[in-house]
Length: 270
Image 1: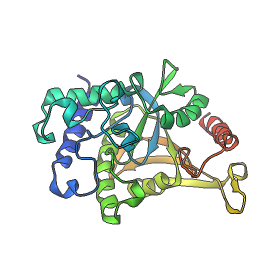
Image 2: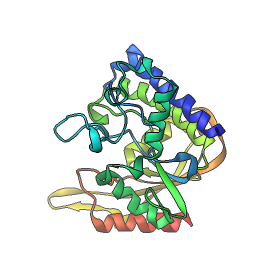
Image 3: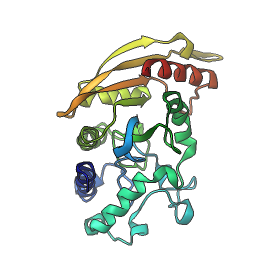
């Protein structure tokens, strides 16, 4: 077992303990959904995308029912045959991690991840198949929530970010990731809070979103490096490339703007 695999197991144990904490249980998490330390094999990835937290659609259908059978994407208490997370054994830990590592080989939420994979391909990377650089996805908070992030209380967001930041720092430190692609201004703002990330922010006129009768939403790029996450030294520089538009936002990002962001990613990654 590699040092990185040991670290992932240690991180997962800590996240499961958090799910059993009464204070954390009141923060709006889906209590029966497993933590998601990583989507894909972080141990083989030199590129990772970064979001806020896993969508509830990783665990429930459009009508709010738990995904089961072939539709299931990630483990739950029911699928693991558990009454509570405190009862999880090493076997259950391994099943959760294996489901995370093999996520893109089974039943991924392509409607969400496909948007980001479009950018990754400009870096000769992908979540899928056998690209020269395998990519994975990380979240600032590795828990799915019942409500959207913006609907949570300020205290809930603060506590969840603190839990997630420690996990993120430990995982990144032990991983081979060299580049983080950050999806959306909300993620970037939270990243500023938990890291030493100092970004160059540039307005990108070609990324502007124009709506008839509504104000134009300007586009901005963010680029820089980070070395420390939540007080944890990564012992290297990780390059960060971010953009203020959330590609999966219901507000909508046009195909033209998506292509322009991809062009910038490609040029900035070289």
